[in-house]
Length: 304
Length: 273
Image (tube, rainbow over all chains, first blue to last red; front, side):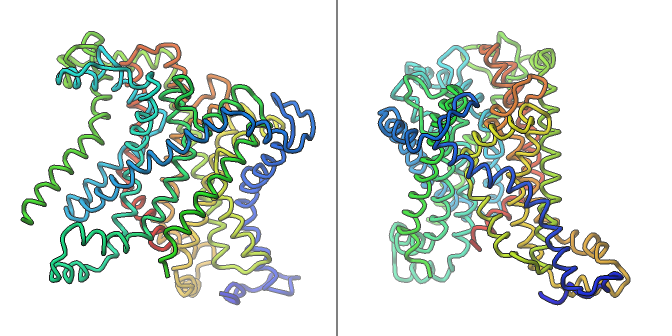
């Protein structure tokens, strides 16, 4: 693609058309680059820099080394939040990935109706997490008026307030989060299933493999590149989910849904301890990185 | 046997569709019911008489201005992000310049920066720059988030367009700009729509950036306004569901209109990725 850009005649006084093209190329990139560097890249470094300083309510009290981190790891609340983040992330994955796999298989089986189904399942994904939280709060209202409580009452089950029960709040938040996002994974898995040659299944049925064997020996191994993508993308998005938690439980009851992401929000924006908040962000980033590397090791080995 | 699995799949599909759409239908139903029916036991899906009072109460509280704010912020952010991203995407394919690969990697790296990690630093930065709690704050932040994605999408498209197309246009007497504008860009429509639609869904649905960057009620976005409304009128489920409905219409209509491009954008990226 090199010399193609040099066709235009250089303007008077310009001797080198290639230099003009270089300037033009750079001039086209600079506006986009400027915004991204100023608002994304530099603040990311500034975030790390801030995590090494004592900053409260926009007042910088200077460099304190790793003290924010030391404080963070000395606090049992941090470890509890990390544990809840893991429960939220892997609980959501455990629910979303099997559901998305089933949905993808159904979508392929149903042909044109399957494409319609995919569209329908994706509607919640287009909604705002805050609106989703509001909507489910209304459905989960114990009574009167709460839809779920009324349905349960019909079967003689005593309604409980799921969102304000320390044992049920986390599973409920997970279920609502998965309701919004699992169909996104189904897109990638549907595309992945489409890549598996149909001949393999024909050969398998000649060999008399059962449905479960077919899944174990053909579908699952050939789907693993798509599964790797789904797991990575969903892990990041669940680990970092905070809006649905803000909307549903605000970290409660008794901190039972305070994940690391929610703690970042609370420490940084409610308590305005911005140095420590940035330290939490860095810890979250490192955990993200660690999880993704783990997946690539685990599932990426079979890829050519 | 095959027939049975098909019927079973159809039943499961129907149940899944109900679970996905049912809650949204329930919200719409609640938003047009009179108060005595909202809390009726057993609940009624179809109200005996519909009312728009709940929507009226939202307007009386000024929530519709937040709808306007959300729309303005999202549209400015997405159109400028797609415009700037397309220029850069084109340059990365058709021009040679210094540090081209390094700059391209910088855009890709920017996509990997998690947005939560930027909340606090950008807040401090925007306070310093006097941009905190101004109408410019959110369009800038949303645009910066969408640009790398727009660069990625358009670059992939332009790389698949043969340069001969532009040469042919030049032979026809088009300037380079005209050739790109009239010949190359129309072909890039799927990439542009996918980038714009993703960007809009992100900007319109955002709560966390908006709530940390805006203080004044008159600059609020819709999700933030709904949370405030809930704080003051927590039991007014009719109005809250009316708010949920108006917040959901733009993204869902957009998704349904452009679902082909959105689904294509994702599955294509993943198969290649």
